Amino acid sequence: MVRRKNLLKLAVVIFIAFETLMFFLIHISRVDIESNLRYISIIGATVFAWLTLLIELITAKKENEKICNIISSATDGNFIRIAMLFTLVADYFMVALEDADNLSGVTVFLGTQLFIFLHIFINDKNVKIRSINLITRLILTVLFIIIAHIVLGEDADRMAIISVIYYANLCTNAIFAHRVEKSGIVLTIGLILFALCDINVGLTAMDTIYGGFPVGSLLYNLMNADVDLIWLFYIPSQTLIPLTLVIKNKKLDR
Image 1 (cartoon, rainbow, N blue to C red):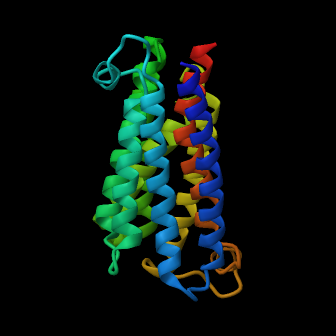
Image 2: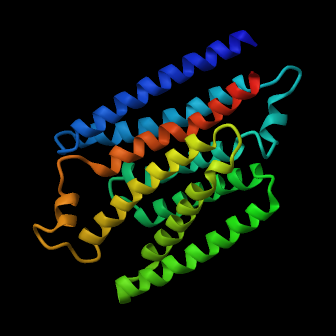
Image 3: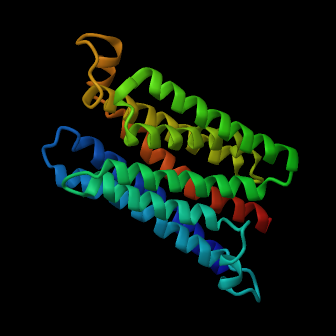
């Protein structure tokens, strides 16, 4: 048991160090001096997050309990592990492909948020709050679709609609993530950072695909800032979400 705990601590230290390095490499390659470095860094950060979850799964093994029993449990964090796998696939579509497939990427990211929803929903024992979660999710989804049609008009294509459905689920997850016992606050912060990242993704799409912001305007300056706001929020979010399972397991061991 002590050996597994030490292995987990070592994995967490290496994980955070690796994510910090990837964060640095992403930003120094922002000017596209070496685009391959940027792509490798982004995918590497996500892959490492998922591999860390595999280590966490092994160290989470209880005495006399098989890993297959942990995997089959709905409340042991498996939905977060699957969500991170979906994130890896989504990053491949949107970052690694030479001709980015944003529609497929956003669709897979929707899968990420649906599995995070299942993690939050299953771990919430309050039936009333579960119902509020579902109602809030439905209301936000409908509201965001209506806003997309109002703002974009005829330009409200499949990409726009799937994006707002995805974002409605992300926002709802951020609202209810604190309900997860032991690690809810960390998950909430991770999802808020995820949402801030996607706000900038949406603004970038508005600027490049659905029109453009007037030169010199606040949004134009924001989208053309020296700091890459998308990755400024994304990598920390992908660090915190896997760590929620580590925090949960450490607290359960006490």
